[in-house]
Image (cartoon, rainbow, N blue to C red; front, side, top):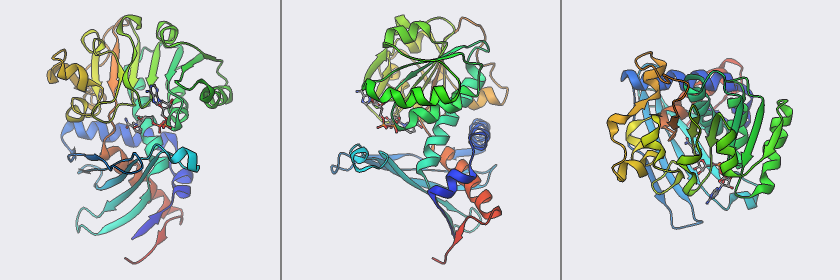
Length: 321
Ligand code: NAD
């Protein structure tokens, strides 16, 4: 079996690789060629941590495995990222362990790829102002990936802890985009495309603030009880997701679904849009919401790229188990 380190993952998996892998696996899921297995995610009662497993099988890409890890909110003070995870890839023909792949960089890049894929397929072509809600570890990856999808002319951002916005400002500056820290309502009133990537447990954006034509990639809500959007938005918008089952249980749609404001039939798999089976955004006035819950198959897809390229380039370490 092979070990692909965090450092090697950073070297061999680009944003473009992650975009292609995530887009392909969303398409495979919508065709029924790839399936996520039920997620386990539990509070440990220790270190305030959430720990779990995300697994699945992609018959089209022949990726079988599991990502194990979670969220340790105290890690930042230890100089570590709050998300910690490792991907285990298995040979789908024999069940043998193929590889251990560092999951931290891959989680960030696959999550950013998901919102970028949603922007590519659902945002207005003339979107010019990108609004960022959140400035934690994931946010800078989100910003870089989103900036490649439209001709954005400005980045505006809000974060609960405003001092952290300097990280996003530095990325925007590097990308040649003017940056402005704004209030949440101001952000909603100016942005054409919004990414939410926080650990919030209550709505940060009021539905009445969102302009017609806005695309929102809602990426932070991946656990029961988390929330970033006003549930009313789900009645006003066209709703897309990576996976329906997760969207209504651990994704942002859980709140509108529980309140009876949204039915399963109102939610479309982004893969159906990628496959050309759903038109996606139909009018320039439509509000589109992508509920990006984060599926195990995304992790397996980018880990499989990491393993393949690392082996090709002699960067994977082979060990006997
Ligand atoms: P982080 O801990 O580095 O940053 C957390 C962010 O949330 C910060 O911007 C912080 O200011 C903000 N925040 C925390 N509590 C808040 C509150 N009550 N109200 C408003 N903002 C608040 O975490 P990260 O690695 O950047 O991840 C951000 C979120 O994205 C997490 O909730 C994580 O679980 C989620 N996530 C989702 C996916 C997915 O696939 N959908 C993947 C990875 C992470």
